[in-house]
Length: 315
Image 1: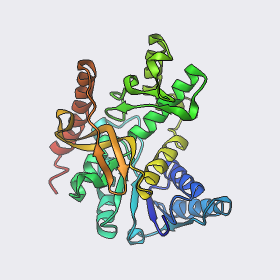
Image 2: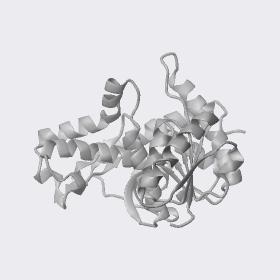
Image 3: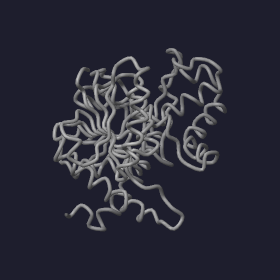
């Protein structure tokens, strides 16, 4: 892992939490924070850098002030974007964030042409699709982060129900990172024991509902979205890439016939390693789950169509 360099585009709460988690674990040699407001990136980079004296390795944390400062990175994480405001339509938010992601992806393509890109910007599945189309790179090199976060939220709900197994819970979540996500208890286990042999059907449904509501619950209390759990989910994925762990993580991937769908980016179990997405694992889904997955895919395609119809992909 010596010499590995990671850039994080967007030094907001999520980007900073990801940088801190990476610095704290000593995953990479160098972390660059880039933001449209350079002072924010500089200030947070200094703060995180001053914490590294107590980290296992001497991670270098710096601000990238200009786009060219992110050159020759091994992994680039995109968290840039704006939250939806009251007067915004879905199309407004899509077009604004797609424009931001398109611009920063252009910088990555120019200055870090060999990088693996991890997209975190929302709406996540559509923004991951944008990165694919802007780069034109091999599909394994573009990954969306959603499932790693949603799975950790599912694990939290399972822990609350069972009262045990915290680090042994292996959850699975499919579909989009949004209202059509599919927490998938059928193959979820605690220490190898199937979940349905530990919790009741009623508790299972409660776990599913609360997992889907995981982000909104935090907003209700904080009046802003989560950042610690997303930051850690990002760092887990970056670690899997830089350490070539070949770790199974639910991730947003471009499908090319898998699960019967193509030209769409959606959450599925993936093997994450040095080349990014090493493999998409195709699960044998029952008819009910297939229908839910198809609905999730359709919701993503509807959002992609909004961008397509606006001429976004023409230029």
